[in-house]
Amino acid sequence: MDKDQQKDKKIAVLIDADNVSDKYIKYIIDEISNHGTPTYKRIYGDWTKPQLASWKTVLLNYSISPIQQYSYTSGKNATDAALIIDAMDILYSHNVDGFCIVSSDSDFTKLASRLREAGMYVLGMGEKKTPTPFIAACEKFKYLEVLASVPTGTTVVENVKGEPVNNNKTGMVNKEELIEVIKNIINEISDEDGWAFLGELGSVLNKRYADFDTRNYGYSKLTPFVSSLKQFEIRSRKTNNPSVSLKYIRNKV
Image 1 (cartoon, rainbow, N blue to C red):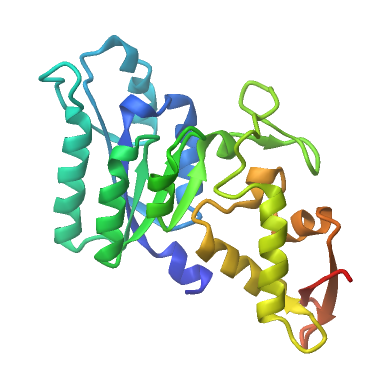
Image 2: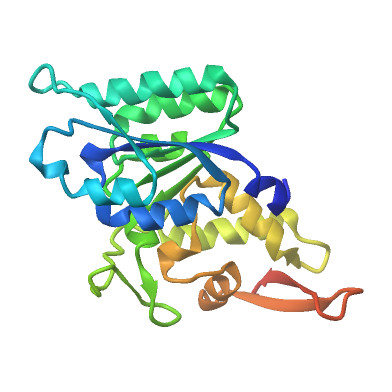
């Protein structure tokens, strides 16, 4: 799917207000625009609770519809059930190409799996505390702390408070394991001289790890990220278009 087709995807955005802070909303909406066009924009919670009051202005500014769900029984999350029911109703309406589920709650794991079984593109967003099963059930997953980070250099990122991002969790696979994975992928897709197209490497990584994103490691693009690892060499190859060159990567001997 090319970038134009990707941007044309209609995406239903469903937000769990009980598990997401309103400070992230700008970054959520901006990131969704990289994957498609938000159509349904709904957020679920018990809006009689004072802790959700800070969402009021945000909802107006971003035209997000609040869905009221009372907490009928203590200890039971009625909000999750309402979001899941709405997701299935939207699925059967055949009006969207994908869903963005914003939550750090593993209760949505089965929902993400079911939507993907139906051929839907599923983008998940949540904090780094999000359980791995929910992350793996999504086609792509983005960490809210990373989306809210502002690069201040090639390797350091800061959060919205100007504090260094806690990189104790950088994804489903840590950097050391990722290096070995990259080496193996290069061996699998390289030509006889050991060179592999960097774009293909990125595509394979995205398919293997739902939450793979170079921003998790402090880099905005794949090329500077793999260059920083020092275990690989990168070479540019000219194309028929003098303004366009392709990047290739090879394991260092």
